[in-house]
Length: 89
Image (tube, rainbow, N blue to C red; front, side, top):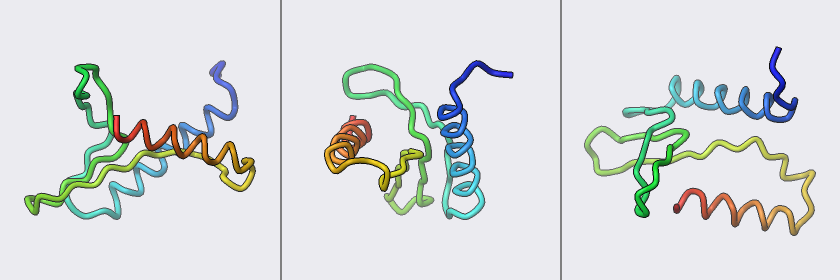
């Protein structure tokens, strides 16, 4: 048994479920946990990266197990800003 908090275990399970669904349903080349180099030189990863097979289009998905309905308005804004920063980073 793991010492991870229940919320973290649930989040990881959700993350893997979403990645599996993308692998089964999305079209194009699907890469899970794609390693990337950030502009500042640090390493990063993309949860789901979809390449449209040569049409110059890609999609990036960042998986979060957030219950927006349980958050206050200020917490929603804070989380959205943090997630936007993470994706653009």
